[in-house]
Image (cartoon, rainbow over all chains, first blue to last red; front, top):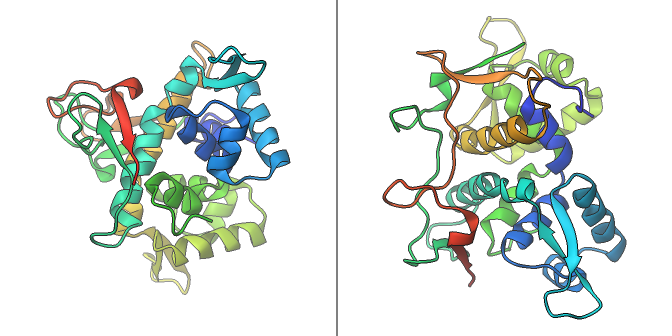
Length: 142
Length: 142
């Protein structure tokens, strides 16, 4: 594990480098909150889902709160740190749209709620707002 | 697996939802190209590294080419599809910078090559360039 790594990517990947964790977070952004609803959405085995939810709680990405419907259940909802993962999910989604679907093949679409328009492509930009390709950047190591 | 999922996140995560895959890609963006250099950087067991490199080749994210130094070795370099993962790596990095380091704790820094400045924070924006938080978006499912 990379808890002591000076690389922010390594530390993040230690928390998120698991397909179930990323799909649970995707569902949480979509408003899924109940264990049984995660299970239905993901088709994950009960013990795996339970383990991954526990890890996301321990990592401070999800928190439990009383069910919104007043029942005895509890909801799993994103913390502020979990909400901050929105750019990660958008980047994964937009890459998939470009590279994992045949031309014309239908996929779910992330839209702006107020207008219904698809979100513009998100990419790194410089301080003037111009797109910054990878080769125009360099990692300064410690 | 989600090769037939209508969700672009699910398809991407099937390719990338593995900590080694993400760290190999990070290193590839940093210019690492040789098996032994990936091994030194990642500390991964030889068989695991070999398996993950093979998967990234099969997925079309890396390609092999004759070594830049003219030796008998070959280099692993990003394909165009692999290069398109730059926003994913930047999002993972910037989240880690915010949430995985104590205040004042040093970490490697992604900079603009020409100026040396740290990259601005990347986030989803609307068509007017205004930041778009998660709650202002909605996924339109098929």
